[in-house]
Image 1 (cartoon, one colour):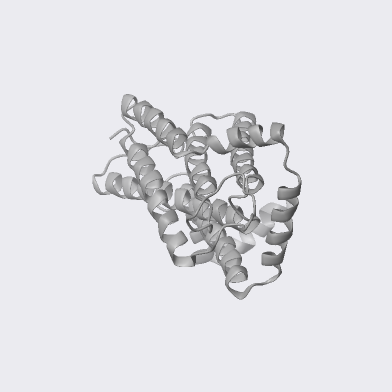
Image 2 (cartoon, one colour):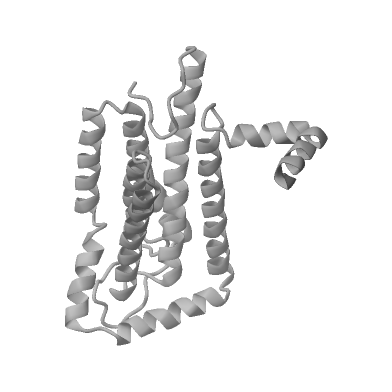
Length: 257
């Protein structure tokens, strides 16, 4: 009763604002719920990346936390754990990413989901280019271990493995989640994707390849990029469908055009 009265009051007092909010939360339309969620995730991830980048540039306390955690990982090394972490790191190696991308691409071609295929190509190829660009822009040195488990000479910020893990596993998780109506399965899919990314990030720190801020920034950048690619491609598809006068599909499935 109270909720209905409040809703009626808001509609009467703020009609334009209420119409705008309803349009953003609608499951249909070009700029509906799918666009709203994508925009929120994109802005939030960019904000997190910006905050980490600022701390790195100004050498805020996060930099000292980086060094402390890196030294702790170096002192915690043991052969069995090293083997496990090397396997975890391989979950986002170039070979693994290429294989997952190829398999996902074959599935999308088989189902004729051309919009998703375009989003996958942009996410993976663009993500690689973005990571290289960011590394060149910041030029941060790797952790200076005297006896590194993994000796690398290129820039450290942001972590390429972690960023690509975020993009490929995040993309697959979003695709699978939108194809199931069960919230339990959606939660499990998203949780598994998150744990895979965290495992890769942990392995990169343990192996002495990256600092904490490197992997955190990589997760933020990867999340922002995959959200941008999926949202942009789906929004463009919906606009094309609207112009052609065709009925827009359900938000959980992209067009097979």
